[in-house]
Image 1: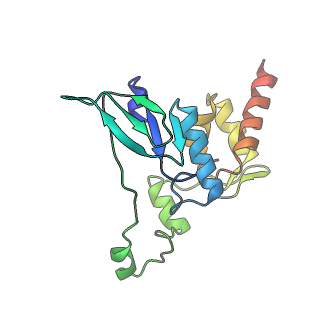
Image 2 (image 1 turned 45 degrees about the vertical axis):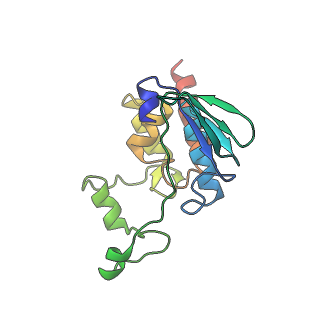
Image 3 (image 1 turned 135 degrees about the vertical axis):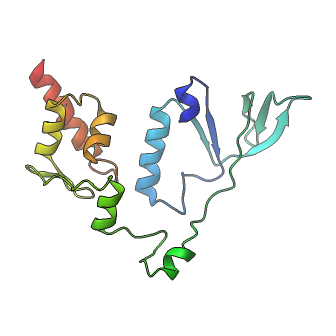
Amino acid sequence: ASLREINQQVTVVQRIGRMMDRQLDPLGSAILHEEIVARGIEVFYNDEVEQFYGQTQIKGGRLKSGQRIDCQAIIAAAGTVPNVQLAVEAGLECNRGIELSDKRLQLLRSGQKAEPVLGKLVCSCNGVGEGNLLKAIESGCTDFTSLCQRTGAGTGCGSCRPEVRGILEGAAQTVA
């Protein structure tokens, strides 16, 4: 995403059929895929780089599928496995990573106390109601990404994102 912010084309070659299969469930992988594609990043699944091109500098690569990708740089990642040893030794609850309590989540939000849920609950992961979303929209949050970042809605499992987008679009139509 950082490379896209400086207008560089980015392609991800993923060896398996979904993103971060050890860290995310299938829904989480699908949401991550949507985010990546929305940023203009091309993704090739179930493929891998077979050959690189270039003599003195990289010019591109060919995938096992036969697809050729022109490029000026390659960033390779070998995957991730969370190291929870220190957390376990400290007595923290761990599963596939460190389980966060409400208090720890509050600390991660800069120590700010979470706003109470206003209206119908929309995002159960982060306790965001329809009223919280409308309040943020009224205060100038007019695009989907900033609305999610400001309120926390859609930043957990992501299943509420269509409803959040619908509330944003509905508010925009009301104003127009």
